[in-house]
Structure formats: C-alpha cells, structure tokens
Image (tube, rainbow, N blue to C red; front, side):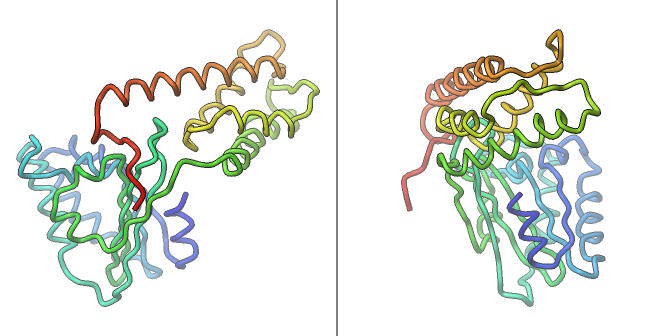
Length: 253
C-alpha cells in the first residue's frame, strides 16, 4: 500500500512482483531480469517497481546456499542497479509481516525513470551489495489500536457490509452495533498485523457464506476473533522458539 501511494504521489506508474517468482525461472532468470529493467525504463512517467519478499532472490552470495542460476540472476540485478542516478533522491519503506512481526524493511532506489522498492521480513539476509545500494530504510511498526480500528472498519466494510448491503450475494448481516463491534475487535487484536486483520475480515465473510442462512451474527464474528487471536499467539510462540534473528522486534533506533 505504501509503495502504491508513493508511486501515486510521485506521478509514476506502478508495478509489483514477488521475489519468489525469480528462482523458478532457472537459467531464464538473467534474461528476464534484463527484460524487466528494459521494460521499466520505457515508461514515460517513470515506473515504481515493488518487489515483495525480495530476500527470496537477493540473498547473501557468500553464506547462503543458492543455485548458480539464481546467483547469475542476482549478479544481473546488481549490474542493472549499480549505476548512480542523475536524481540523488532515494526512498525506502518498511511494514509488518503476515505473522505479525514488526520488522519488514523495504528499500528503494531511484534511476532516471525507475524506482525500486524492496520488501523483506528478514533484511539481514540481503547480500551486502544490495544493502550498499540502499539510501533510505523506513521501519513500520505494527498498527496501534487507533490504526487497527481503522483497518477493522475498512475491511469490515469491504468484505462484509458492502456485499451484504448490495444484495447481489448470499451474505446478510444481523442487526447489532457495527461500530461498537469494530472498536472491540481492534482492542482484542493487539499485536496483529494489517494482513492478519484483513484475513480475519475474510474469515467473517466465509463463515457467513458457510452458514445455513448466510447471515453473519455478532456471535459468529466473536468466534472468528477468538480463533484469530489464538492463531496469532501460536505463531508468536513458534517465532520465539526459533530464537533471535528470525524477525524478532528490533530495538528502537
């Protein structure tokens, strides 16, 4: 969302890819990487390319076990990003991971017509040559209660209220205080990421569709919230068991 807004306010076109798409390309990865950069530079407005889970292919060459094809693709990426830009501005951003980890550190780099934004839950896995190309890093904390309430209301409207009021789908909504319920959910979901909150709203919709009459009740919402909270707590236990350096919350800087 941040990268898309950044492109909008910068007057640039926007595109997205995931780092996990690169490794399966094998020996075609180098050619595809050059084609990507060539295509990006054809935009008249300039292009902001957002690479999610960038650490999937921009990993440390010295210590990580990566294939020769992936190594060659990484080298092609480094070659295409190695020249200094005519524009000295460089931007980056961070956010929350799906598991609720508050350490997602995307980074970006300007070229004359091209901005690259990289996102990763584990930025420590980036190759040093990638870090050397980064000018700005911005850390996004997990949403606080005020932000969670806005997210809950937004996703409740998107996945529940709007489909129910349009009448085009089977989903219906029982009568209760929706605003109060959203505030309550925001309080109960402390520590959750925006993605987890979105998944919770999707589960409300799915629960209604799976019910006999298609009506989402307050009790059904409460049940899904309890399930989501328990699942989040389990994820945090797994994360803690992995030990430090696996997406734990960093010290303030």
